[in-house]
Image 1 (tube, rainbow, N blue to C red):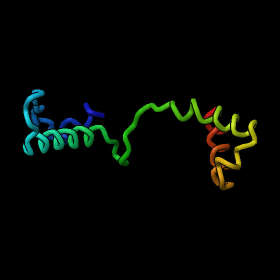
Image 2 (image 1 turned 90 degrees about the vertical axis):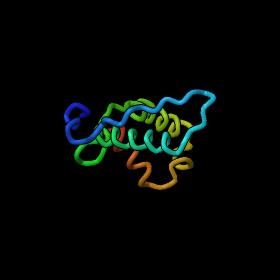
Image 3 (image 1 turned 60 degrees about the vertical axis):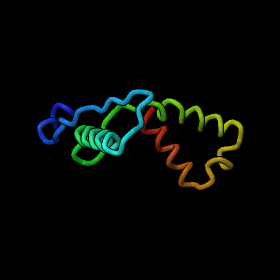
Length: 95
């Protein structure tokens, strides 16, 4: 996405280098923040999200639900039927 959107955004703000002894100035903080906002704007998709692989929840959620079910604490942790239904739907769709 960065290559596709490079022409749409100005990425010419130079990085700010600050040594350990140096105080952070308002200008340095502002330039760094502007640089970060412009960078994240370029990697954002047209519909507003940041595309990327995130397998953590898909890896850890099913064993958590299985463990809660086996230990009979599923209804204690997931207190509403909607939470349970959504967790089961998540596992069904991603397994």
